[in-house]
Length: 79
Image (tube, rainbow, N blue to C red; front, side):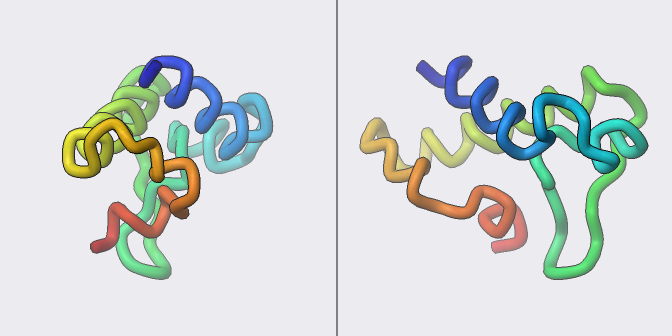
């Protein structure tokens, strides 16, 4: 289930891999710190792994309710 959620989030956040944030910064999920700074990753693999880790951590803290789909994942990382 979570792999599908990661894949769907990636596609949504990057416009199917076409966003400049993904192309230039390897940021798979619009992951940022606070309101201004977007994270850059050294490789696409590292950026995708960061998105997986973020979703897995949120899932662990929330359980299997999948309320995650109703949240703005980008803002969760800053909290």
